[in-house]
Length: 230
Image (tube, rainbow, N blue to C red; front, side):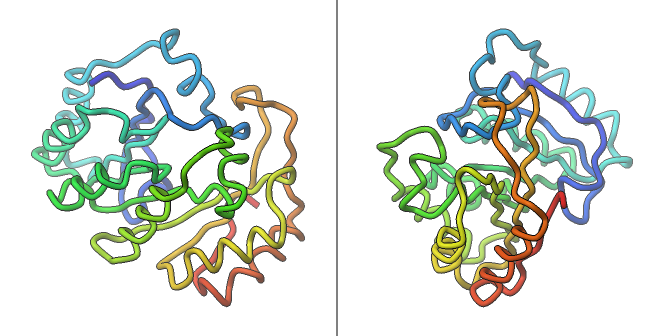
């Protein structure tokens, strides 16, 4: 399995772990605010790490790192992912998976086999605006709802998170999201940051005051709602 990025040390990406972060290539969504555009629309041009290079790195870092965060792109697109995670876990590492939630059956298979210790799932927007927000107007949101239910069933620790963009999110959206994930373990509203790596540069972040307002709307639904990147 090829990987297209390696952050050798992170204290933030995997709660409670000293970890590295691995980046897979390719995604089935086209979120305009995505900050990893090169891993979504231009994968063929990116330099790849072979699986053996990554395994060699992880072998050498045993005792220094105790976690591996796998992000993308969308990692669940990778058919080789289960076998790769088996190899990672055989070295004693805990695994965190970032996902957009569009492959609930593949997610369930990883959880059933005990290959993932923590999941971070993006909630892109309210269901009514999901397709617009991910760049696929005709998107069927049933898989998203299935992944939400799967995680809230409590197989592993998890978090939901939304990158908040002024052009896409409103107070009504936050209320609708709150109803969608009511009772969730943890939810994070992430401050959008514009940059050259975004699929559609020029979008805007909400003000800190608006972010705080959104959090207040969500607290009755998910008491553990926090802000990131403010």
